[in-house]
Image 1 (cartoon, helix red, strand yellow):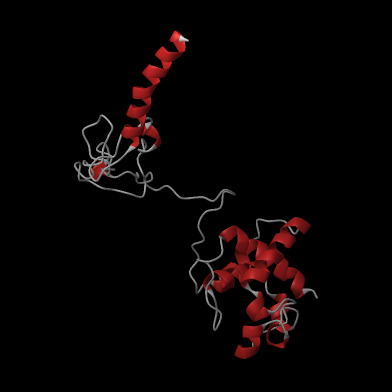
Image 2 (cartoon, rainbow, N blue to C red):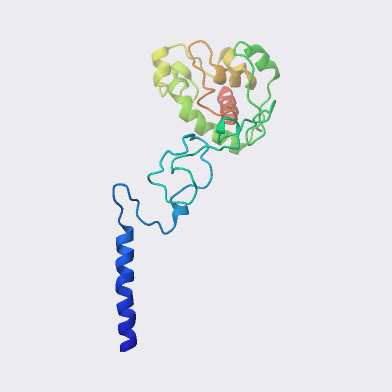
Length: 212
């Protein structure tokens, strides 16, 4: 019984210390039992605060900087992000480089571009999903353009051609890809909205509409 009472007597001040330490005041963040969980150790790439005293009123770790200081003193201009190597070219996860043909080079695109994705069912199915999302409102679910009842905007614009009629049915995949990227006449460019890989998948689906 005496042993139990000793533990009980010791636990009372320990519990009181824990409860009071958790409280935070206006300028007191309180005791932090795991500061690394609250304070980021790595550099934040999209944040750059160069004032080393910024946030020193809430800091609780052992370094000399304020809580909000977030610059890397080892890089030029204390930048957190590093510039890519000179002359390096970004590539997508499929190894594609950025599309650089000028918007007025549609004829060149039509003759030279080749679709990197095969005309397989899985690719066409993905292209259909993307086409429905980005193209249906003007070109219609079946690619009928102004004559397609599902082409709400296309019916209002008038003159949107059907994919399976006239010269439109003979357009090459490179032509279609270039037009999706840069636009043509009343069609606006979609290069900034649709990723390059997805544009090629849309082309594969549009090619099936040309044959209907």
